[in-house]
Each structure stands twice: as structure tokens, then as C-alpha cells.
Image: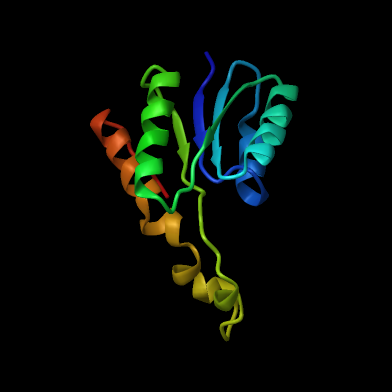
Length: 135
């Protein structure tokens, strides 16, 4: 039986790659992102690999949009999420210029995935169903 997978921030970079990795026959991969064209392109890649793709437009810096996105995801997946990859992040150029290696400056760069609305809404959704989220 296939898995229901949600990958936030999946229109480019690591999130898009993770979504492609879960794109296997029988899986349903829900992806979120701000750019509708990039969402459509990523969905095409997922479907070419044999999975069902569901795009959800969402700006994860907006709590209301995140709440609406998770409500839509719950409805589309009949309340079933097997895997949640909370990848959405905000990277600001000034943070990339901080002294030291970028891995030493992760906290200010990974804002949305670490403590933003996507984390708390996703965590609440999974906890209500007795599931665990690792982020």
C-alpha cells in the first residue's frame, strides 16, 4: 500500500529533491510552495515517476495560509499523512554573509522549518493522530 507524503517547500532545492525521492508508484506526494508554476513543474516530475502529485500553494511565513494548507491536505488525504517533511525555510542573504561556516549559523536561516507556523501546525496535526514528527 502506498504512503501519503507531505513535503513543504518542495518547489526547488532540497524539498523538490525529497519530493522526487518519495515519488514512487502507489505513493501520493503533496507538495507546498509559493510559486504556482514551480508547483506544476514539480508535480509533473512526481507524476512521471508514477506517484500521484497534489500541489498546495502556501506561503509558510503566513500562519493563516499554513492552517488553510493543512486543512486542505487533511481533506485531500482523508486525514492520512504517513510522512511529513517540514522543509519550508526562509534564507536571508545577510545570514549567508555571517562569519563562519553556514552550518554554524543555521538557527537564524532556517526560520520556518524550525519554529514557524508550518512546524507547529504540522506537529499539532500529527499529535492529534498519535503520530510523531521529527524535524
